[in-house]
Length: 270
Image (cartoon, rainbow, N blue to C red; front, side):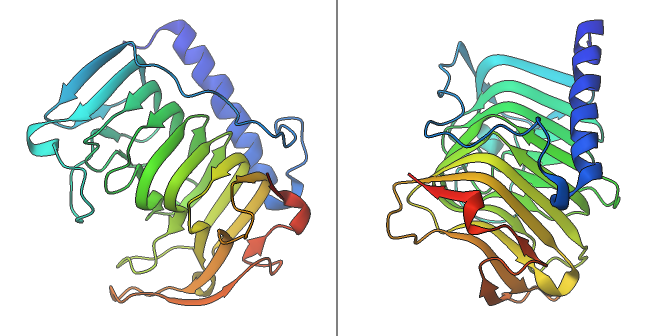
């Protein structure tokens, strides 16, 4: 049941992200964005309880996990990389998932079917993907605020749908890609990605991958990369996406002012 306090908090949080969505990549200078710092944004939490999940939990409204650890069992008891796995949580359009830990096995994490908010959610060991964004409306906004993820052999956030994804005050370590705009989905969209005030800890391959030929944009601000003195982690990589299920072709990396929107000053190495 959604309490009045939950509704009020959700409205306030949604308003902040709506302001962010409206301003876009060119005006990421408001006080909403904290300055870069040397330390991660928050310590990893300790689970207060653990709960096995054998069937996907569907969420409408606000679901507060109260720092319970949820992990897959039975049909959801996989932490492999094979496609088509079911998620631990499905968030319906407008839903909020907050204050919980997803343990291992994590199956396919969280699916957002439309606009959603994922707040203070932590993945101890990412399975196939931590979260997949699947809404089809260009106006959809997916907001990830706080939390973190470890152990993603490939993607943390998979952006298959339309709209805008905002990742703010997140931390990630031992990963392949933090965000990937789907490179070979049957239906493709122009996707907007904003990543702000995030801590990246090596090893890792790529912060964001986008499809230049479909009009994707990625803005990076206040990015702190830890333990990567050789600068092997690529901040933003451009691909030539397709809708034929073929492996997309990498066509460039680094800021270009059009698809990958950031400067050297937006990224610090610690």
